[in-house]
Image (cartoon, rainbow, N blue to C red; front, side):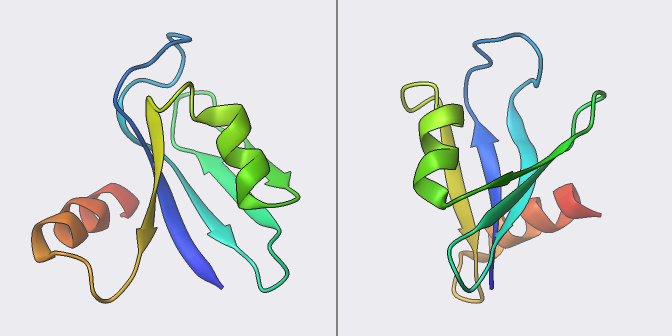
Length: 84
């Protein structure tokens, strides 16, 4: 299982804002669950991370940031504040 967040640099739709807008998990079989941290919260299941990226990347304006033990301390702190 791997954890990630979606970091949006530009909000094309005007709905989710910018910054860390969603959090998610990739399960052992590649299936992903994504939960939006916006006023209109929702959770969606995707077959795989490639499908999720195709739908939500908005031509590179939104990126997946994988959460792991080796990430830079300042990034880890920012994500930690986001997920509390």
